[in-house]
Length: 272
Ligand SMILES: Nc1ncnc2c1ncn2[C@@H]1O[C@H](COP(=O)(O)OP(=O)(O)O)[C@@H](O)[C@H]1O
Ligand SMILES: [Mg+2]
Image 1 (cartoon, rainbow, N blue to C red):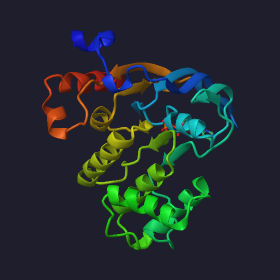
Image 2 (image 1 turned 135 degrees about the vertical axis):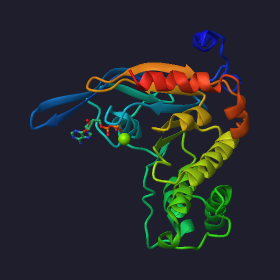
Image 3 (image 1 turned 90 degrees about the vertical axis):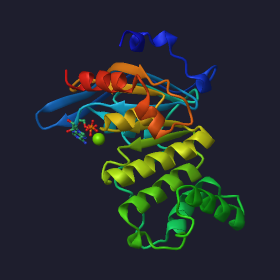
Image 4 (image 1 turned 120 degrees about the vertical axis):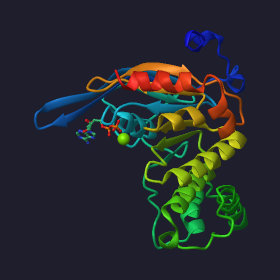
């Protein structure tokens, strides 16, 4: 445990020398309610490096989705600033892709058509064949190589979420934002999708922020786990660097002598 807390000794080699990709400076969010203003987040500071994978954990209602949707540009900021790649954000943009808990596919379209909608918006000048190539590449990567032309309604929830992941990566965003992406899936499917996500991430090294309420998932995926305090006035309470080697292997992670120290540290935070 001692060693665990000496953060300066932990070194994530793939982040060495990388610039900040996401900076939240003094972020504040107030929701007006019939009983008066509710301050969800207050003076929240967060910096994430290019290519970093960060998990965010915190109690239900603390403001995780609020934070993520503000970064996505889908939710107004009440105070402070969000910078992406050095630029202050102003609304949503193709530099950020979001995957929510429910897949939100257009049900009457096929898997490839669902991915194509976004690809057409982001790469309007690419030829038809090139766009199809991109869609197929990512659908194949998420394990849907034989399902391009299946309608969304005929896909299982896990398969729909695979399409959601393919769609997000196909947009070639600077940042991938995931809000409890596997929260509705059974544990076997969840494990498969964690592997799929990490495999593509390992190749593309897109800066990723994943909210999860699953402590094991947060460790397995991330370079750093960020712990949010409970609201109101939530902020970053603590963080834990996860230095396990990449590419990650579930068995190696679970068998790592420090695994249960990390797990215990996070659970302890949540229990206080
Ligand atoms: N549009 C809204 N108006 C008022 N209150 C909201 C709104 N959205 C969320 N909240 C409240 O803000 C808090 C944080 O919500 P949320 O960001 O969804 O938390 P989390 O994702 O951590 O569970 C909760 O108390 C929630 O009830
Ligand atoms: Mg939420």
